[in-house]
Image (cartoon, rainbow, N blue to C red; front, side):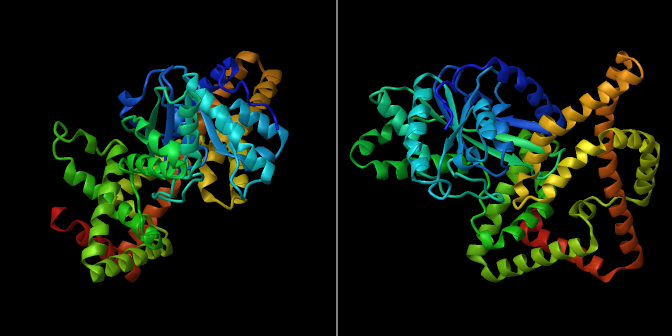
Length: 463
């Protein structure tokens, strides 16, 4: 195994690298990133152990990394099996400041024993005043819910305290990460940062009953993260809950956002309002489940049928929430027509790197790696390689100044190409919507009825 001894040292190349990726992540890939509670982040140099929920593979640690306004370089602890793919991958992960920890099913006995070295190194990083980050669920969850927190997180925290003879002043910093959409570019992201807390209240228990201290600390930490986010505990009906979020979110945000001066957090232009809405809706539906079982079963049935109806009609919920008049459809057609030459330019110069990611995603068994493939493979490999090739080719055929301008234009029209294609898909869907509406399609009418029933059942007169 390669050495991780100096992983906490400041790396200038890593710092330069992150300027590029921070820009792509914060300004290009996500449409809007909102950070709530940044004032809770301890200053650089104060030992802090960051924990968070885990839903979106590599995008979660990137969300953590690119929110800091200082030059800190957090060290992450991640599942160890990915380090065993090859020496190159292991060295790349080390460069990215990631330490391996092995679950029993990820490696052999020697691998699991190596966790002790990882925990000691992680504890030393905290004692050096570093920032350590970990996802205590030890794996990403396919939805807005929580798994149990594993023992690795408290073991590192208590080892850091033990290493300093329980005198180290460090804090646990809870975060919650939320996405309006998981799988493609142009979504919105929220990072909620909670109040940091110490663990000295568990020290005496740890000295006599370490396992009980692990459990108690995990409970406190999990509740700190969970209180900021969304936890659908009914996994059997998760697709229905998710559909209810989609149907009710806009209406729920609008009914709260009456006065910006008194409820600015419910600003429907920012993604935090979506998080607040989903969190509130979980509580409403859970209450219906507990108090009115028959109404809950009907709601679940309606939500499932509504979801199935949308899929059969190849429509989206937003078309029912905010119907676009035929004049709006015509305007979109004109925009598409005027933007078509730019789309073609963007297509010609970006088709190969863009579609390379799509080919890789087709082989994914876990769809929640989609954004990670888009961002990591695209930003690190396909686009840089193709743009370098284009630059050399155009420079040899014309002038190097023209080649620079050509690459800049190719990048700008990449965004044009991407959003033109999305607008085209929405345009076709709007055409289907108006066709169903004009012809009186029976399934279309049923879907409209189901949507109204869901809204009435969940929000009632308050909407």
